[in-house]
Length: 251
Image (tube, rainbow, N blue to C red):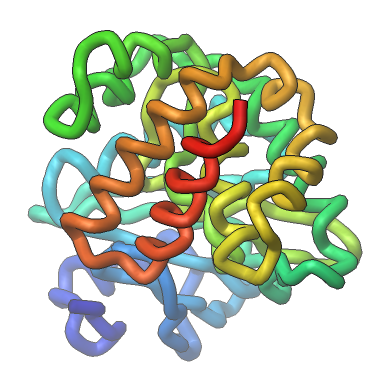
């Protein structure tokens, strides 16, 4: 459940207030899984603050220095009591549309290409074969291995467009794996937004990492993510199932 500014422990508010130069007002930000997601107006400008409890929340702060320039800059991070807090430059942008007629499709493809180039730093980032081990055989999981940083949760809400700049946000669930995995996720997001599978894959041809992806690996990933979506009754479940079924009919 999201925590508002007034619900934060006084010690957490005090640190944020000090680090930002004084909080004037706060507004909740929707989306994502963080317990804290606030757009703060401070005496020195606007700041986005997110946070959660537990060690898993710390990995986003650790990978931030290695992300491409399309990720908003992290300003600072603090551990206060059981809370891990991150502050970012505020991006006042709109979410992208992945509909078939959208003018955003090119900018999303460019962002996906930039993400696919990021090698995973020497940090405790969870390998994809560990993240989804219960959903596939070792042989299938081996097809997904790689040494690239994978966002794993690219949605239209995690792209922001501001002044013709495209940003990718919410790196809270990174994995290490093959460079084409995020593009497969976006193919399914396009299907969810109204593209048929063939059209979605044609869009993906603009991304070099996709062109190098083994078809067996794409099928294995679709099987895994469809199984995960079914288990979690996720809203994207039908799109993953449709893509998995379509893949079984084509070479």
